[in-house]
Length: 163
Image: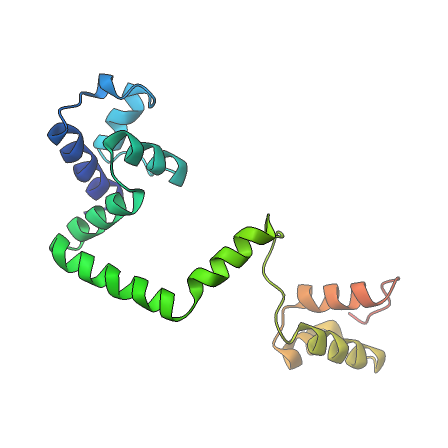
């Protein structure tokens, strides 16, 4: 069973148990709701949150129920597994990191800077000054040629590196 199909079963079951019709849930277009309940669409997280609010459950509950159904796991076992994972997240202070990132505001685009980026940039510049081609620098440092070029470009105002 695909994830969208498993979620469809969960959404339909919750809607029916609550005694709602698709028409009662007017904040989501009825035809779109039908496609969700048939497992024909992969929904966004925003739609998942709206669905959960309409069905009066947490979004995480919808996902847990769907993944348990998909893997043929009893919900009780899924809850135990989730509880262990959440305890691990707390123990590893991931929750504090999340709070810190959220307080910092909008995250910058792209990947986070690698901890050894400054060292690799310096080494790329040194090798470049010795006339080593970009492809060889990339291979030596375990980087892509694009990353090497970016390191060289940011450290010199003109592109004088060896291709």
